[in-house]
Amino acid sequence: MDKLRYPIGRYSFEGMTVKHREQWISDMEKLPTQLREALADLDNEQWDTPYRSGGWTVRQVTHHLADASMNSYSRFKLALTESNPTIKPFNEERWAETADSLQASPEISLAIVEGIYARWVLLLRSMQPSDFEKMFYHPEKGSQIGLAFFLGFVAWHGRHHVAHITSLRDRKGW
Image (cartoon, rainbow, N blue to C red; front, side, top):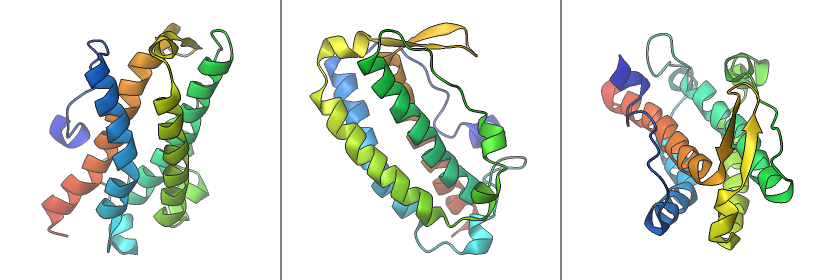
């Protein structure tokens, strides 16, 4: 079950080197294309198939990626433009249960991901190494989160959810 839930493993952060940073930015740059390819030629029934028992459907995973992208990009911008801002968490489970997450075409959220990631990659490539030391406060976790850690997490998060879709496709022979 853990392999279905975490098909690429859990996120771990061991610091950020220049090589890590470039790899994570590259991963983010590739994500919209990888997501588009993962969703290619799926129909409504396949979109509404959960990637694992008790997990979200392909449709919900796609909309979650858009929701998370909007929130995460905002967190980056806040940390870059304010001194240690407190971010606003969002309830991912409840967001995944709203009508738009259950009914809208994944294409709508794919367009959001494409737009946000295009801007985000441009922003990331403009940042100085010291910018990645900036932090925001996450009130639910009760901790400071640095942009270096968060960049690695965001890159992992995208690969993680695309793998939910691609591993489901592989298992189902789609």
